[in-house]
Image (cartoon, rainbow, N blue to C red; front, top):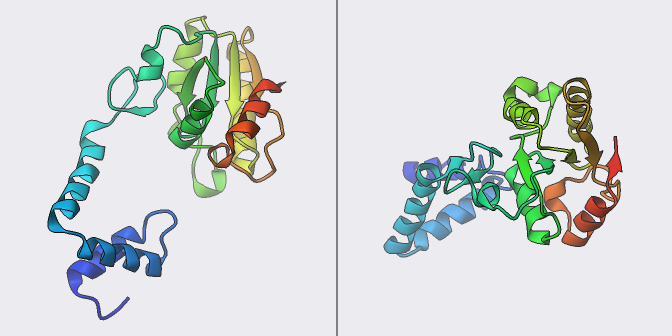
Length: 201
């Protein structure tokens, strides 16, 4: 976008790298920030810095949190026998907002995507393996959605568990989730029904 002053151009380019931002929406957001009172703009900048400074990965479930362990892992009332495996924090939040799952979570940090160069070594599979090795988990619920990446990840995890932890049952959310959809975009009732009617793999 030529003709913009350099600081504005820099911000537009950086905003344009965020999901959901094209060049025009990035410019609108940058101009809105420019019109914002200085104190509010500085507070927003501080919040962005705090996001990186104050968040950490939970050493148990690998979710982003303000403390370690995260509140879910620290909650003694959660069921230790069932882990819901999700691809990302968005999916965990969607599951948790429904209020119908009372077990633990594990966040893989993505899904297998060979075409994009994402393989198993880039996911949080080793921490999951360490959790399963403790012998407390009886069921692993795969909550990935119904994309090609989700199917590839589900197959990989199912094979790993069958090979190394045959005592752990592997189930998945029922296929009420439409093909091509992701867990983080599902409404709570669809997620609840999918969890209640999960299927063994």
